[in-house]
Picture 1: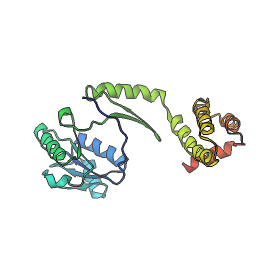
Picture 2: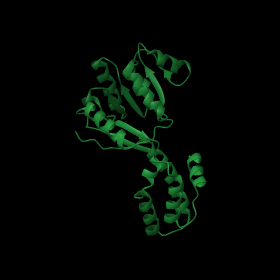
Picture 3: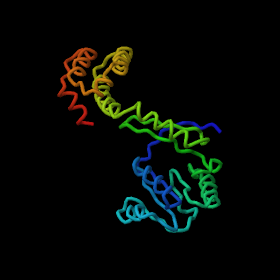
Picture 4: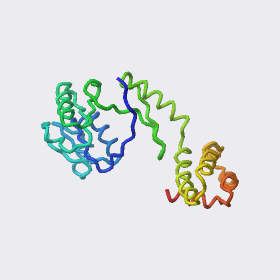
Length: 223
């Protein structure tokens, strides 16, 4: 099967997880990290999930799954240790046209979850199309050594600079040239070494206007 890679905004969207064990907890914690409104169905909950329910971070819908529980959901995850139940959840979600993932049951999935590396606004998703999550995880760990925290800082600064540059009213070709010079500059390596004075000089050269070290720190604080 060939999967179409896509990044989705889950902020405020209903996500239902069936299964309250360790696997379900990991899925729920990831969904919460990306702003979903999570509801869980399970006979038992881990101690952490019970705490999330008590603190109002997630909603507990009860111990038994029913089709009505997923009405209005953006996505559903079946994460129980019962393959038959996971299949029932998947079939119900498909019938309602809702995206569904059944853990370790690719045939019951309409989407799969990649191994994710996140550095601020940089998101790198690695997938083997369900063939080997372990290999995807290995590749993601290899990438962690290559893409460090400097990418988070670099993108935070570029996001602020991009807005300023676009407001200058330059031509599309001029903007493209500036953005490419920034992306291909040694700023990333300089950030890794915390060479802020050198970065300020380089930005001044690329942008044709004075950029101080203090101004760079303002960009980063604003982010």
